[in-house]
Length: 585
Ligand code: ATP
Ligand code: MG
Image (cartoon, rainbow, N blue to C red; front, side, top):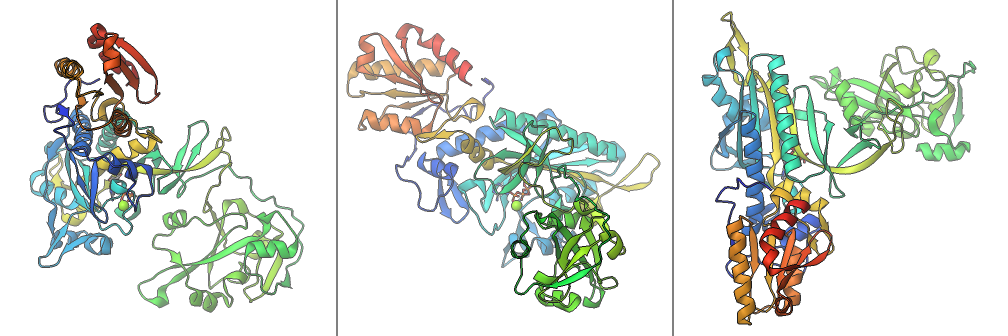
């Protein structure tokens, strides 16, 4: 247990004075456990879609998380800032992000301002006139501050809000090696933060998307409520977002039979499954699925077209495709027929040279005896030999991995599961410094662009993710440092003078011992209701003071996570409770 809790966090509370409006009913629009429980436990209330008020108990948890984040960021030499949420449009124009963000950014209508969704631009604008020599570098700057994002589908309570608190950090370095070092420091801080927050997490390498830059890793928490699909190896040696995951896959064997191409009629056959059924075959690996994509040029006439082949039992992974051909998009149906002469169900790789570049997944490397569309509606071709019949074909890893496949080293199997991102670390490189002209003078007096990293953590999302991993049918199960209180003290018979007095004195003892205690001293509430509330709120230990127990000079203690109950003699409370807390946390 950490003892250096700030006085802000260390509030002592009696339920007669503390506003914790618990609810029996689940909120109508809630679908995920953490959302239901945070509302029912009186931690948050929705104001409007994706926007929440933090009530005292919720705020206490968020502040504890902030405190952990602050300690760990300070430990790697981070400097804490606090930047405004209002930010001039002009700044966002300069990096092109006003346009990139589109509808996802909140714009202030009567001023040329946005509500910042992140702070690369503002931090860089501070770096620009201040970090001017190699001697000013490196720096790690951070803040814990409110972000605004016009999320299309805010959901899951504070898991995905339109207003939320982020710890965002930015590193400024003179060299790429320096960036590696800053990145590794943040990586270490993140591992400490999530461990101290009680999360079971893993790290995946991630595609860096619209942010630009090179290396990027996401800290993920496995939960049904997650929106990302991730591939995890059973031996925990591999974790990756499915968008970029790789696996070991046998290639489709080359038969070298040199059979000639043969067109055949396939009336009304549109899908691979229909084709397999029509041909009466179960192994779809030789049914090459063809899709057409467009790499848009400056004008339509400059567009380039790519036909992408994968095995019939595979799916094209569009993120992988983007990583090879940036800006690529699927062709529209009319573009498709114009270029290939056929509709989606009948396109194929033969005879398209000059019009389309053909690429195939590595599984199809130099495969033969393939079947694919004939670029003529309702016709397919068999005996396609990619080596013989598709000049200029290139091979890339462009398929999506599947559950049960082997890892690349063949040592373990992949499983696919859902997860939510709680943190993101990112080697930005020079994108923002370049756009905003943030430069420094190196040792030789030469001007160089500052090299940046950016590092984000969602504060409320940590709390929600923790609850997703720690609850049961009765409520939340807190433990460790982010637990709002260590103990819930329950006075069962408040009307009885001696019971109330004893409970009061235990409360005061706990305070002296530095135990954070939530004291249910409410008079007009039945014992059953108090126990239900205590389970819902989920403090790690419940200490129950009742007339019955006091007759035996003892109290009852319940461990919330296991439900285990025990009696502790009154004389031993002050030694036993701290010991129990140490053991269960
Ligand atoms: P997501 O893919 O979930 O939208 P993101 O990639 O947009 O996340 P970043 O821009 O990297 O997230 O933000 C850093 C961190 O801020 C995330 O790891 C997450 O913990 C948190 N975060 C992002 N968006 C939200 C949101 N709408 N509500 C709550 N927390 C958020
Ligand atoms: Mg997002």
